Amino acid sequence: MQASGKIKAAYEELMLAQNGGIVAFCKAKNGLRVTQDEVIASFETVDLELRKERLQVQKFNAQKEYESQLLGYEALLKEKTAQEAEAVVKN
Image (tube, rainbow, N blue to C red):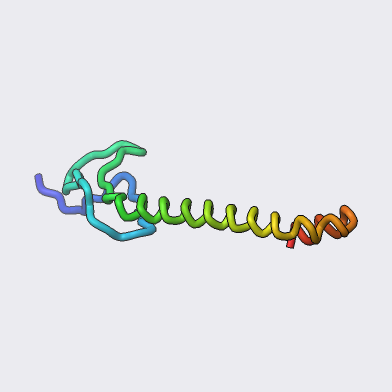
């Protein structure tokens, strides 16, 4: 007996990545069965980690700059009402 037909995956998933990069490992291959939430490939994350560190430093520097500017406004704020001082700090 002979039959013809098409083989179709039981489940398909669209995969998207925010960033391209170097593949650290990939165990995907034709015919491989995988379970839900199983990692089959990953990218190297060194560039992302460096970018994260730079952003944390920028945030720290911005916070310190903000605090420094508030110290400069201290004399100015003493002459203002509580609401006016709060508005200056907020801006």
